[in-house]
Length: 558
Image (cartoon, rainbow, N blue to C red; front, side, top):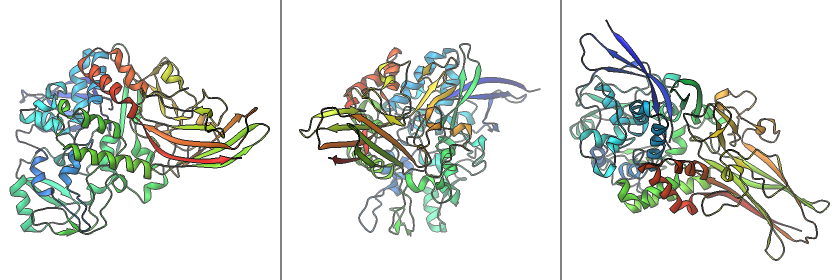
């Protein structure tokens, strides 16, 4: 006879911090003394063998890779400076997990087990395959990882995670929330690892003897559905008793992409792992030239966390060299400033002592801008200066502490800034963001408290029809009724009084982006724990560099 024990699980991931609340079935079989987890509805057989190896086993051959044009595209050094490699070192994730544990202490072991799914995937999958739940804080700090399980945990989203994922359930709901499928039956020496190229017997033998894996050609490794397994995340809302009372599509960039014009011609990898134009070898040992090699830099949007990791590298156990982190940060900022948005002034005139300026923002990405974790925000900084250079109107200025002047949510955690189609006052700011509310319609940054988005006016990708969008990716709030807020663009009017002000006037417009908004960081200050205290301290020390300008334009108006 088999007993079933159902417990609530919570999963947190940041890319950065995310929380997913799921169900876990633990089966106690008649012949088994070890509980066998069922993860995402799939039985995992007890594996008394190693399923993964850390990235240092791959780096010996996949570093020192130089293209014919002289670019260093080494997979190992590029990866170790990315957020993928540092997912388990992310101090914001540590703080977010601790917050949820403090909010729901009765569920701590289930919270940590699911939080490790995509931030410590090798340790999580290995532990679950061995009938064990995975702890987050027991594997920290990163610079003191000693045991095999600790090392697998700290290696983050490593080579033998992604390259062992099969296409078994790609694109299906069960694949989301870290529901990827990896073989647990075959021992090391017989384990398959996937790549996009055919490999001859000689080179396959070299890799097998070095790593223990057998190379298999499979193009599924280049599909967006692989990325979607961890980057499509739902959270379940909990009440004070820990009961599930609702669900929130916490981050769903894959579903946004599916509802855009990008779905037929650009994959996730085409932007975030751009291909090398030169034919180049993918191994420094007996490597042969390959076409369309994907860089392993994993360009994303979290430049601020990368700066934090580099600045506090010793405390966080960062393995990438300082210059590697600097290069990765520069790549990230360049990607944001060249591939995210275009900003233009489409109309500007003076009418009846009023400046009337129409601003258009075009989203260049294949998902909402910003997308993913809801701490991210984009906003317009608009100013008018007179002929002496003195500012006579300003909306959206950022303070050194990372807060936005005029933003209701930064001033009061119970309020938020509405979406605007026209701005007439300095205390109005156009902020493109997702604002969460709890069952009482109170604003929250607690993922397990949130039950819906009370505002979601993040700029839509091209081809996105807000009238046919599924509820999980729907526009929320006033933006839905804004006729100028459509797929790929938003258009906003500034109407400013100019009484007794003479021209010419200088109009300056900038589009800013902040990965971790001021309110999301400051709300953690109420939690007195080492992880939350550390992150808030880090944030406060670096807040003046917490945002970046994505695009800008200016004109002179007579």
